[in-house]
Structures are given as C-alpha cells and as structure tokens.
Length: 334
Image (cartoon, rainbow, N blue to C red; front, top):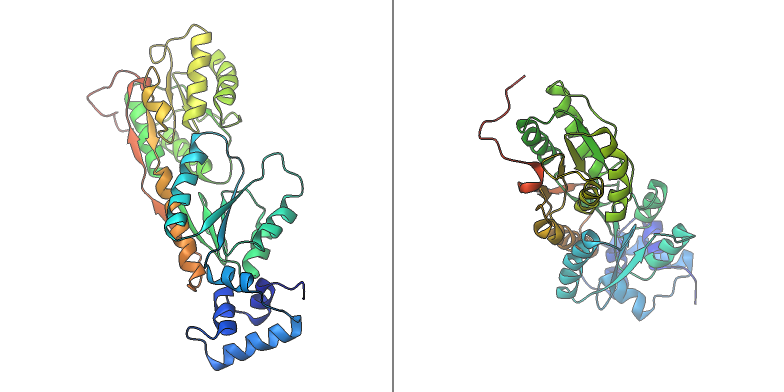
C-alpha cells in the first residue's frame, strides 16, 4: 500500500478531503471534472484508500484533534469540556495534544493530522508556517482564541470592549497607579492590554508595561511580589489564576485587598466567585468557546469551504469586592 494520504490527494487535486471522500465512494454531488481531478491525483500518488481512511475523511466514527499549549488549569479544562460535549454529540472522539515541554512539535502535529478528520488549534500554539502547510493539505481547521489563519475558520471571545469597561470602572474608583500582570502575547491578552492602554491614555493616566508571568496562581504570586513593591492602586491581571496569586502575594506583604490595592482578573472561573475577597473579573463563555469550535469544525468536515472568518463571542464585566467600594457616579470625562 502507498504511504500517500487522503490529505495529499486532496492537496494535489485542489479540493477538500470531504470531496475526495465523496468522489472515491461515489456519494454526494461531485462534478465529472472534479471526479476526474481526484482520479488523476489518486493514480499519480498511487493512493490506496483504506476503509478507515475514507471513514475519517467523511467524519464517520472518526476522531477530531485539538492542540493546546497546556492542559493545566480551569481555563483549558472548561474549553475542552465544551468541545468534547459537542464532539460526542456528533459521534466523534477527541485526540488531545498538549505542546508543553514537548520536543518535535511540528512532526507530532503532522502525525496527528493523519489520524483525525479535522483539527482545532488554540491561540499561538503552532507557528504560522505549519498552519499554512496543514491548511494547504486540505485538513479542515479551526483556530480557537485567535483570528482566523488563511484557509481556516476561527472563534474567540471579545476582549477590547470589556477591557475598556473594566479600566473605566477602576478609574471611577479613583485609581490612577495601574499595574498589569500577565504577558503581552499576540492574541487575546494583547487585545486586552491594548484596550487598557488606550483607555488609560485617554484619561491621562500613565500606561504600565505588563509584567510577564505564567498564567498560574504561582505565576501571579511571583508577579505580585514584584509589582506590589511599588504600591500600585490596582493590579489588572491577564486571567483569574494570576489574580488569585496576586491576592496571595498581597496577603504575604501585609496588604489588604481591596483596601490597600485592588485586584482584577479575567475568565470568571469558579474560584473567582468563591475567593475572599470575591474577584472582579470579565466572564468568558469558556465552554461555548469549545462548543463553537467543535461545531465549526463539523461544518468544514461536512464539506463547507473555509472563509477565513473569525466569530466573536460576547464577554461580560463582573463587578465583585476585589476592586474596592463602588462609587455611584461615573468618572469625570477628560
């Protein structure tokens, strides 16, 4: 049997793998010209379709793949639950790949691509060149928590509007010395910090540089010990775990939250609601992010052509105690 894959046939013929599958099985609407292109590609590559390979291409009894940078923490767990629930409803299993501390990621991802009928990729986990190679092969792909890459669909949460609303709320408390905890990446967090910087600048407030740290409680604790030395009015955090770590650092330094320093997060994980003080944050629809990615991937596997479209899910500002006593009046316009 040839080592060629149905993805290589699709790429050579210039069609989707779903079209290749329909042409090989004689099912569904396929034009005579397209069927001939598939036949020629099959002959040129000496491709022998296995029953498993064709069933994968059709998405029948197949596995979907999802690539995360990490699987620890409630954020990824909630997104994955939403994804898996929809995949299960569609009769598909899920193969999960975490790239954390893994060598040879491109080769591993390419191997995964041969064993699934479609792939979801989180954020900036894979380099653009590899995404292009996979998309060009005809593999159905959905980007999660980032903009669409050419040849894919994407779904992410809204960032800028809620980040601006959070910054305005904090300014209304009278806060003027801001600190930011969490890296300035090229995706969601970057959009948040850009909106915060614009809002602070509009109010004549100095714009701080985000302090890099892992998106964990431990990372937030370490960042907090550094940031709190300068006694900011408020520490805005890239996610709730970082915020919970900053609160621990404040306690360790003998600072009261929110009396001495306000702290805010992002995501609204369960711990944010039950921490003391309860955490002011922005609620992301985490399970719906995963569910939407699974639905989009199903559409592509069924034969829909990718449109490079990014779907944006709404987020919601959630005010709790960690940002301080609430003022009745909005901030004065500058």
